[in-house]
Amino acid sequence: MTTRMRAVRALVLAGAALLTAGTVPADAVPRTSHAGDWLHLTVTHGDVATGGTRGALLLCDPPGGHPHAARACEELDAAHGDISRIPPAPDAVCSLIYAPVTASAQGVWDGRRIDYTHTFSNSCVMEAETGAVFALTD
Image 1 (cartoon, rainbow, N blue to C red):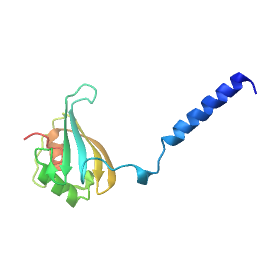
Image 2 (cartoon, rainbow, N blue to C red; image 1 turned 180 degrees about the vertical axis):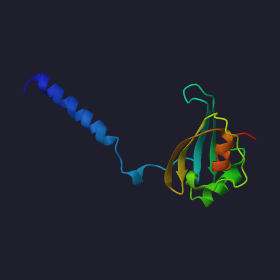
Image 3 (cartoon, rainbow, N blue to C red; image 1 turned 60 degrees about the horizontal axis):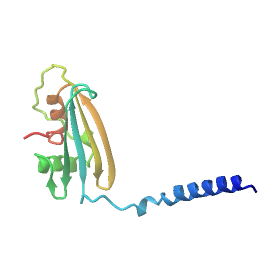
């Protein structure tokens, strides 16, 4: 075997060792530093590329990091962490003005990974359909 072939072989073996060293079973991955259920929430007004974005970290054990954390956590708990299962507000009256907002949530609820994104026709419709979860202002 030539010196060049030995060098290539050594590089390939070193690369393989690095790749396998970085993989661990899912059970061995340490849990997040946030206790309990949590979601990183964002609301983007207008076009996603040009609109302004607000965000918050909703913590639910204990509730915090969100202007309406206790209510949002209660609603999520009742819906088992599934934002699309939050019952719509029965008395909400929203205009038909198209002013799109995109709501996103990523995090962990009851040990399950949550990845939610939905574009609503306006912020009133978003609040009527998602309760306090995306109510990021006081």
